Image (cartoon, rainbow, N blue to C red):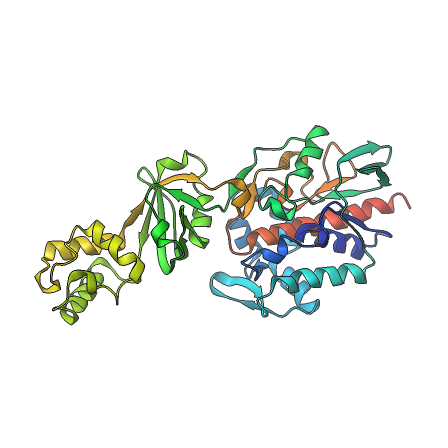
Length: 408
């Protein structure tokens, strides 16, 4: 086993649980689950409380390839695994599943405990540099050390969050062996905008709708949470939207925020009228605090074209309707994605055409299995990507163990 992240640990557990007489994991970091411990802002959105079909609907790349493994190891199975391992779980908005403790370390620690219970051996500080095939086995090369195994599972992750060890080692090793690696790109990544968002940095918007268009086509629209940053926008809505902005140059898309999605244009106008009546004696700039976060008010006013020092009682109907339009369609112009090392997950990886979908074994390299973010599969944010890691890892671990039986 190469890699002791989410997929690597689950694959090791599956292999040992299937009856492999010996399971060894090589991990370049000094401890296991480094990336897992920071996922979900340190809370770990471990899966989504949905059906296998709904997981597949959330997959952005190669969902058909995943049909079997997702149906064999579902979100319900993942939840049962962690509950049985002593981690109580809870389901939040969007059916996102977290540990009740809100501590990602509890998820990682539960997997480490389970590996120990199964007798899995982890070699820390060991960076695998190459693989070599022999008759009936695979040699793992790590510095001056070489060891032969009947089966090897590569679970080294993608290239996002390189500080956690995800630097593309697995892709490089497999590419040298002739395995096709599809282009590695950021998926679920923050977006840089033409508009200067630095003064709004840190402002979180909840219960807003983000819509992304390409020409006349709506490519994404969803209700949820997002935030402004010093470079543009991020947060769950933006991360999911970015995955739908891959077919064309990013600057050919347009974003629009509806700050009041629960209100129709007519209902919003009535709300504005009510606020204006309440603050009739105030300047316009001082009449919007019930409607918007304070940081946002100057920017909405600027786009409305209304004099901020105009008395609220003097605002015309046309001006009021323009304000409503801005609140319902606050446009942003994407210019770039942030670098891949800032992405939540990596799009691209081991070409699924090279992999047996049932076992995760490479078709042209018997005895070598792949799983997790290393593969060219990715999904929306919401716990789906960890579920893909767990499902592919369970398949790889079980199949790798069964292959070892042939040599015993």
